[in-house]
Amino acid sequence: MTAVEPVVPTTGSAAEEPAEAVVPRTHLPITDDDAPPPVPRARLGKPTSEERFQLAGAWFAAVGLTWVITQRLLPMGAPGYVVVVYFLSGLLATALIGAMNGGVIEMKDRLAASVIVGGALTVGAALVSVIVFVVIRGYEPLTHLNFFTSDMAGVGPKDPFDRGGILHAITGSLIELGLALIVTLPLGIGTAVFMTEVGGRFARIVRTIVEAMTALPSIVAGLFVYTVFVIALGGPKSGLAAALAITVMMLPIVARAADVVLRVVPGGLREASLALGASRWKTVWHVVLPTARPGLATAVILGVARGVGETSPVLLTSGAASFMVKDPVSGAMNSLPLFIYSTVRSGEPQAITRAFGAATVLLMLVLFLFVIARLLARPPRTKTRKSPLRRLVPARGWDLRRGDPLVEIGPVQAADENDSTYRHTRSDSEETR
Image (cartoon, rainbow, N blue to C red):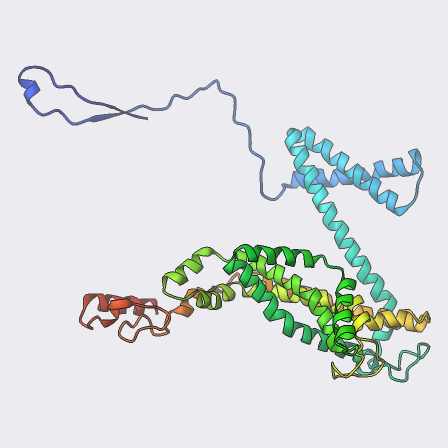
């Protein structure tokens, strides 16, 4: 601390002289040697080797406790019961070790970490079990090349796997998804731009409707398209009707995900673009959308992954065909979900195995789309991205004599080349370039 003590002049001749300068005095802080040592803070990094050993010991001890409970005290050998008892025993052992080492805070921290890891492992185990079950049941048709290059025209449910295939179903799914994307992409992203950039009361109403449609049952979307397009307008059951039903399911997913992505775009980029003289539309087109491009791609792929596996809307609107159909308006068109449903209904073991093979293809397609979404959503680490505001700057820099259509310079555009402002701006643009 620094205390300031002014010097008061004395009476007499000394009082007439100017006051002396202020002399600061420094006081060192007083330390208390008898104070207790500071409490060590909990470490936020990776666990130490001792902590890892304690964690492993707790869950290893849970194995013995589970054996005692399930085999001696309460003899129940069901696998699900054993897993639940083991998880609870592990939590109990982890809590006891945490309380012995760090008190209540350490106990709560270890319990929370164990619950989170246990939930992640449960979800991963469920996903892996579904994939393994479907692949084991349907791997045999996948070993035949004709399964990917032929359709089911003239093939019965009891025919061997070297006859027939799912080419017509794959083609139908791609055509229906393509038509759905043509409608969903502009409407979904446009709705998100309206909710984010325009706002207002109507934007709040639109956001509420989009959030409500996100939980819309697929059978309702199929009934809506069937009632309006097939019954009211007299259209046939076709790939176009199925594409419209898939659009109803994809649109809220894309709009909601794109809205979340556009909200993350920093407001400073918008303000900088508007300050440069760009219009609101130019700001959205050249700044907001390029910045959110990876997130928008993720939103579209998530919508496609949702639409490719829809069965109820396609069942009501498209109709099933066992041969190749490429015209979406001519008549019935098959797809992968509809092929799986109609093949399983036959009840024949050969047909059911063929359906599991088609389900494997559909599952791999959905997983592939989700992997692409994760890769697109990951920000670049090494390559630095240029600011989207550079799109509003001419390639040759700020040429005040030439002017720029996006930026209104005003009276400075008429500045002389010998003017200092003009020379300074030209030198800044050359350095930036």
